[in-house]
Image (cartoon, rainbow, N blue to C red; front, side, top):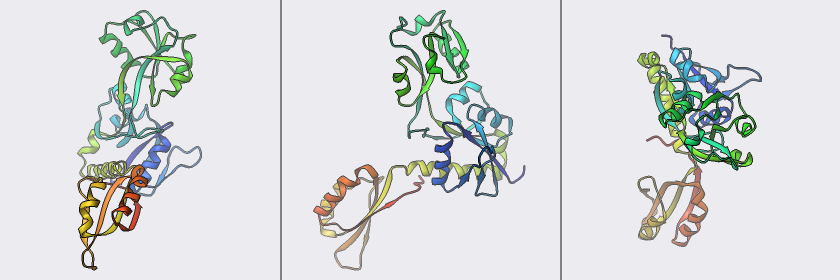
Length: 291
């Protein structure tokens, strides 16, 4: 195998969030207008912009060495790939998405069993069919090309659709019957590529950096100086991943304290730090946290 890694970037809803994640991990990706071959600032990596639904198949077939897609599409396509890392991010949040069964708010369908003989529209045909069959429900499952939520009740009786916040379901007057599965973005690799020593190392390094970038989301670093005798008052105020780093200063009796905290609590903590005698407080961004 050549020392060149082919990476599949998901086109569509995950595209911008994925490029931003790679940027935080240290990779700059640039997409020209109407180009399906993004440019990345690593001469050993070539990128292809591909629909997330197709990435598992192309990775399994070895057209791509590595790619990012949802767990739902790995299950749907039954792709024989290596799942390298869970990357918990989506198009609008840092959480997971759910594949839900939904019907019109005023529908007479009140339970999964009521879907017997009904029509369900979804992009995830295999996942939805298997879910219903396991529950003894025989429904017609039809593939939806998009805008699935607007098809109820005029075109179909129910839908199985991915949702992050539920906003679209509410906007279209839909009611959730049940959750089929919870999904998140995964970094996947071709099995043969993982047997290649060079590619394996390249892939695992990338996975480490991407995970580190996600670990650092919404975290900042905090540094300050304080008299050592006041540490008992200071330490209970500071949350940390493990414990803060404390270093001696040249000024006798003074120490420097450094820690990482969630960005959204900084405004609450800094006034308290000042109250107990902290000085020279510095807040700084964190790009990666490597476990």
